[in-house]
Every structure is written in structure tokens, then in C-alpha cells.
View 1: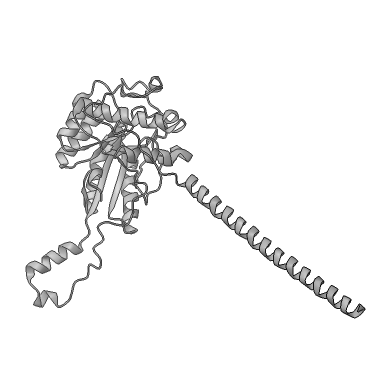
View 2: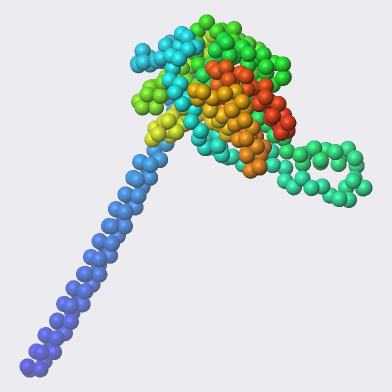
Amino acid sequence: MALISSIHKHISSKAVTRHIGIAIIIAFVLVTAMFIMLYIDSEQRQNQEINPGYTGGESDNLQGGSSDMAAQGSADFADPTSPDDSTDLTDPDDFIDPDNPTGGQSSDDPYDNGDSQGDPDQAQTGDQTQQDDQTQQAEPVQIAYLTFDDGPVRSITTGILDILLEEDIRATFFVLPYQGVDDLYERIIDEGHEIGNHSYSHVYERLYDRNASYFRDDILRARNFIYDNFEYTTSSFRFPGGQHRAGTGLNARLEVIRDLGYRHFHWHVDPDDWRTGRTAAEVRTSVREQVANHVRNGREHVIILMHDRYQRTLEALPGIISDLREMGFEFDIVRNMP
């Protein structure tokens, strides 16, 4: 009997142990499943926070626009009644990201036509017209985009326009809203140049240190100034001082620009024409050397930054144009850039 009792106790003990083991396994599975669900939920929430999706503001009707439509804080705009130093122009345009002038668009060369070497048998057996067409397609087109910031200024912009007219060249002017020079804006437009939006105030603190709504109001005010006065719609934008000025607020401002229908353009070549003591010869040399360096690196289009505020820029321009033509460049406005 004692033996039988011992056997029963042993069997009961094994059953209890087995049941406890099963319970532990079930509990482990349940806890693991709970942690997995919590992890998945956490990941989903994190993705929603990182990519909430942008909802743009209301659409803007240019025809109904007004240069007074800036929101609260418009009193902080610099007074642009004079083309003199009412705006912050100390080191106005730092050099930035020469390989991505449009801030997010591909910098691959749009004129790449592949191997320019033709079929050696084509000259003997092919049609001459077809051969000429293939030769032309194989030759890359080099485009220089002359851009001028922070004008117009009567004493300088007039001379620049005269030179461009004589040379039959179109350029892009990223303007500020000055009074008393309406004829210069009109001449820029009438002679086939492009006007770009360069903000209304050019004040870094307002544009970059505050909420992006101030940036948006500033850009809108500049756009409406140009449209209301000259019935010209701007489609190109340049950040005053360069997009790096926006710091951690850059993405929000890029959203504003896209929402308003702008492409933004930086530059490949900055000759520092704004720098005090710079000579016209130094400006010309700087442009030539920087462009030559880009050509050596295979670039076939260059955006050149200058300012139509300085006599040295005006004096350097004919030589710059001559150098670029000698290097095989043609000219166009940035709006046409691929």
C-alpha cells in the first residue's frame, strides 16, 4: 500500500509540474504577443509623427492680391522706399551647395547626350544630313545663367540692361520692392529678362528666426508687389543670403515655396562682388576661374550670382560675357533651366 501511495503521489506531482509548465508557456506567449503589439503600435505612432503629411493653406488669387496683404507683423518689414542700404546686405549671399542649385532637384547634367564619338563608317555610308544631325546632338550645350540680386538700382541696373541689350543676352533679376524705379522693372520685363522673387524685406530675422508664416507673408507681399504694379507673375525664388540661413526651419520654408508654386535657385559661381574693396578685374577673374573649374568637372550649365548694386559689377560684366562666350557658353533665364 505504501508503494502504491508513493506511486500516486509521484504521478500527481508530475501532473502538477506539467500543468505549471504549460501555464508558464501560455503566459510567456501572451506576454510576448502583448509586447509585439505594443511595439507595432509604437512604430505606427512614430511614423505618423515623422510624416504627418502637409496640408497647404488656401490658394492665392494674384489678380485679387494686394501689396498690403501681409499678416500681423508687417510693421517689421524694412522700408524699401530707397535702393540704398535700407536692407541687410552684409555678406548678402554666402556660397552654398553648388551641386544642387534648385534645392532638391537632381543635379545630373540634363544635356548629357552620351558618347560623342560617331560611327567611323557613317561618314562613308550614311546620309550627310542625318550625320550632321547626329553630330549636333552629340555636342553638349553649355548654358550660363546670369543672375542679379537686390536691385534694381538706377545708376547700376540701367547700365547692366544696356550691356545685356547690346549683347542680346537675357538674364534673371531677383529684385526687391523699391519705389521710384518702376521704369526699371518695366524695362527688365519688356526686354525679355526674368524677374525673380527675392522676398519683400530681405531681413533675415523676419524671414528665418520667426514662424514660417512670417516668411510666407513676406514672399506673398513681394509677389503681389510685382504683379499688382507690373502684371508680371514671378515663378523663381532665391533665399536672401542662401537657404542655409533658414537653419532648422528650412523644411517648413521649402513647403511654403512649393505651396506658392515657386522653384528656388541658388548658384554655382559667387565672385563676391558685394565685398568692400573688390575690384572689377577681381570679379571678372573670379567668375572665369570658377566657371572653368566647373567645366573641368563636366558641368555644362552654371548659375552665376552677382548684384546690380555695385559699380564694380557693372564694369566687370562685359569681360565676364566675353569670357563665357569664349568658353562656349550661351545664355538664358533660370526659369528655363531643366
